[in-house]
Image 1 (cartoon, rainbow, N blue to C red):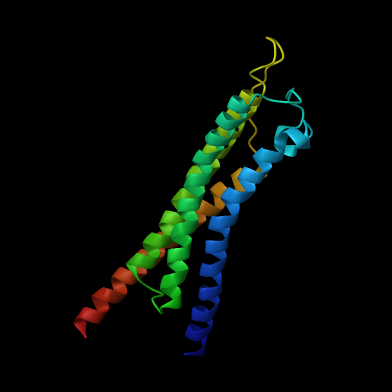
Image 2 (cartoon, rainbow, N blue to C red; image 1 turned 180 degrees about the vertical axis):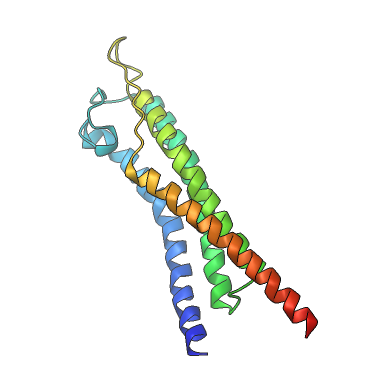
Amino acid sequence: MGDLSSIRRLSRVMAALCLAAMVALPLLLTLAWALLPALGPGWPPYAGLPIPPDPAVELMLAGYLVLLVPLAVLLRGVQRLRRLFQRYAAGEVFSTRTADCLAGFARAVLLWAVLQPVASALAGMLLTLDNPPGERALALSLGTGELGAVAIALVLLVIARVLREASRLAEENAAFV
C-alpha cells in the first residue's frame, strides 16, 4: 500500500509539472522569437545563417507560426502525459486508459521529432527570405535531441502495448473469479 501512496503523491507532482510545461513552453517560444532580433545571428538554432539584423515582421511572424505546429503536437503529448499522471494519482495504475495515455504521449513525441527539424528549417528559411538571391538559406538539422526523442517514443510505445496487454489479461482473470 505504501508504494501506491508514493506513486499517487509523485504523480500529483508530475501532473503539476506537466501543467507548468504546458504554460511555459509557448511562453518561452514567444519570448525567444520576440527577442530574436536582439539576440542576433548567433542564436543557436540559427547560428551561421545569414539572418538580416532586422528581419521583416511578416517573416518573423510566419517563422513563429511555423514553429507553433510542432509545439502544438508536443503540448498535446504533454497533455496526454498529464492525464496519465492524473490517473496514477487517482490510483488507476494498470488500465487500458493509462496505456492509451502513455501511447498518446509517445506518438506525440514521435511526431514532434519529425516535425521539429522541418519546422526549424522552414523558419530559418523565412528569416533569410528578404536577403538577395544567393544569400538565402535552407538548413535542415537533425540532432541527437530529435533522435533521442524517437528512440524514447518507440520504447514508450512498446511499454504502452505491454501495459495494455497486461491490463486486458488482468480484466480477463478478474472476470473468472
